[in-house]
Amino acid sequence: MATCPPYPTYPARPGPAAPLPRPHWWQRAWVRYGALITLLAISGLVILALVREQTGTQGFLVGLGLAVLPVPLLVAAFRWLDRVDPGPWRNLVFCFAWGACAAALIAIVANSFATRWIATATADPASADTLGTTVIAPVVEESAKAAAVLLVFLFRRRDFTGVVDGVVFAGVTATGFAFTENILYLGTAFGTDQLSGGSGIASVTAATFFVRVVMSPFAHPLFTVLIGIGFGVAALRTGHRGPVRALLPLTGLLLAMGMHALWNGSASFGEYGFFAVYAAFMVPSFGLLTWLVIWTRQRELRTVRAELPAYVVAGWLAPAEPFALGSMRARRIARQQARRHAGKEAARAVTQYEACATSLAFLRQRGRRGRAGADFAVRERHLLDALWDRREAARPALDHAARATAPFWVYPYGSPAPHGAFAPPGVYGPPGVYGPPAAHVPHEAPYGFHAAQQGAYGPPGGARGPYGTPHPALHPALHPTPHPTPRPPGPHPPGPPAPGPSYRP
Image (cartoon, rainbow, N blue to C red; front, side):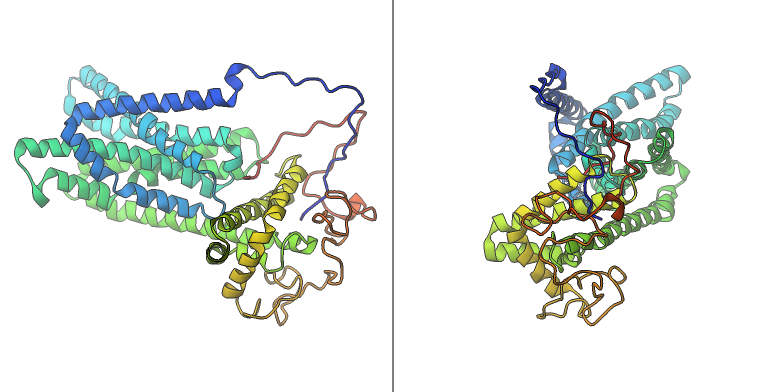
């Protein structure tokens, strides 16, 4: 529930504020961004030269044209999974660039070096190629792709809050890696056809395109998604010890390597080994993971519907909004309504409103579980400010979407819903004519009033007083807090504990 700040605030000590120490030059954001962009650009140029050297100019262009075909579809699918709480595009651009440039370069160099070393040591090039394909390649490639997910997990922690985020980052990274690999395979196949005179459906290029682009465009994303799930579960288990959380991504990495090795080794299982592995293992695994991700996505929507009614009682949200924000169809209708009647700026405001409300719901859930960190109230207030600034454009559109999509027992189309009645069953009380009536909500209270048992500050201009100031009649013991027991105050303001997962602005 929305709460007052769980730790007491203290006035600043008199005297001039000490100047903040200037960060070192390598700690500045533009230096880090510049170094990262330079690294990816150099990797891209090197991998471009290596692929062109192996395929030739014509083969490279043909491979590029064919390999780009599944990329928009795969990226759109992962972006669709992330529509509940979308992160910034720059994370996806980084993941794709890392997979297509850095990870592909690491894989080509390491695989070639390891295969040549094994061939020299064993004097058996055939077994060296088999060993390199089934053992070396899965270890090197999955480790290189996992590095992108690890970097986002460490340095973009605000955008990495659960399993869906891990799946999206891992899938987009693998999509970039598969894009570069497909250029190499398709370009090499085209060069083989030029030497042998093959053309049409019987050509090597057509066969390679069918296997890699038509039958298994999801192969690399499927492997790496297991790593993303491991990181996503680790992101949710913030209250557990470090070694336990570290084992989760490592387990996902080992599973990804094993699945990749099975896929690469399927050609050595006999004439129909590839099709047997594809039908008996790859397709069911793909279906299971797809179901898991969609179920997780629906669970996020249920979290939005369950957590936001507390802010309806506090006056921050309109009664219809929890249902509308917990339905992807209603969200889409709201954006379309805003665009149709108020233009692109209003539609953009509705999109931002939806994202902030979703982040607020996830923050509240983590707060109830004691995982939000000491800055819970600051982050909650930041998100509530963002909602309040966009309410004029968002509320009419969301109300229209709710009326168009809500079940009749919740919100009959064309009829007003009583205050507090717009909520899932069991939140406020037994279902009534319009849904569950908010029996304990003071309907006659002015806008912004919040019941004592909730303990939240109301929106600007409400009956609670200045923004963020608790009502004088409320005592901290009367309302629960999503944090552990506050530490006793000392002579100076207590320092915050280790930060937990943060929101998406």
